[in-house]
Image (cartoon, rainbow, N blue to C red; front, side, top):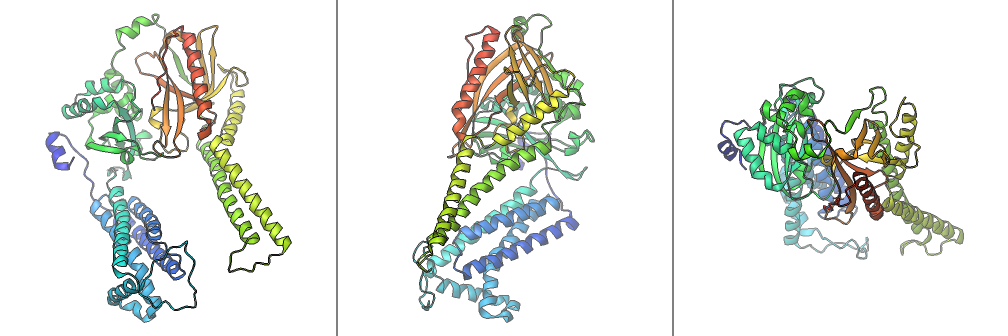
Length: 577
């Protein structure tokens, strides 16, 4: 929806309009981006000269690097103008692609042509008349034979046009998209984005709520469970980072809506822009009542709007739910004492766990490299001497075997459980930290305790260092008919009669790709005084593709045990793929 149509459809409402550039910061970063583009242009010509310039592939890879530099320049330079960001991308793309030919002209025609850029069109025409594209897998020509035959000029011009358009598209879109991000001029910071998901049938109702500004109707919609499957209606909010720290409450907050028809397919840092669908609302400024209404989905708004305002708009529990429970019976969800809370799931732990995964990836590439090296030693190609000494051949075969074993072993490990060492480290740290607490609802060494993590639905499929909001030990006490949880950040005591919902849900990570992996959660909801509470639980045992059956079995075992505590054997398991 265009800005003009939005203003007409939402009379009296304000929308975000970005403009302005911090030139003293933007220019140095932009010059750095141009320098990187020029260096890559030299590298592209060197690949051409050595016969390793792969058509389309090389320029696109170089364009991606330049696009990253343009994004960095726009972000660091506080560029809020899409026109400036796009122009910067165009200029950088031209420096990259035309620079590839410009440096070739200097090399082939002499350094004196460096001050005569008007010769570049003639050089381009000569290149298009003489360049020959050949199959990289075909036998190489004799380097001593002259290459006097001409190439297909029409094909060469077509290839040039395609490469130029692709390069400019990557670099220009990078500048435009980055500059369109919401910006807080008061705090001079880029805003951060969080998303939540609604049932797609609620899209029209949500739009009408924002059109009329009915905070109570919005609060009623937000009180409903999060809808994480596709299709859905995704609501994204953008707010100043200072609001998270409680340093500012008067900064503007903006909301956008998208009717998502297909997910991004891979984990991403921005599930709103990467998801496929139609944007129906873009950057609507929210009023204070709407912030309070959204407090049920976005905890940061409790800081901005105030907890009293959020609680005042929260719908009362339904009469049906109230009649099911004993008067005054609620689940006890309490934070861990500050001196003991958050000692395990820290940024350092997340970085270390991810470093272990990346170390495994490096082993895969190291195995490929060793195998290639050993193969080249033991079995040289036709241009190398064939009489390889037995000792050298044996050493080459040994290196080749070692590389293949390293590659195969690490690849199999990744398919089974890539996060094994990271999870073992977290488990060890957790047992150590919990042993220092004066009291624990669950003994970490209890054989009946399950090592689990809590992953909010908002984090399903997101690319994060640590997607879990909490982790710890879960125990189902059949004698007392209650669920006990001792976590890094929270402690639960949930009587069976306070459970309002229990179901198994499945999320497919990397849906639509060969790496698609099913992850199963037991979604638990319990009665809390005056608020909605939900916890998607899964055993923290790894996310390997080949462990899908193990994860499914563990999830259903947990689900059936919880249902047996409730005495409701007609419970249901919702498989939402």
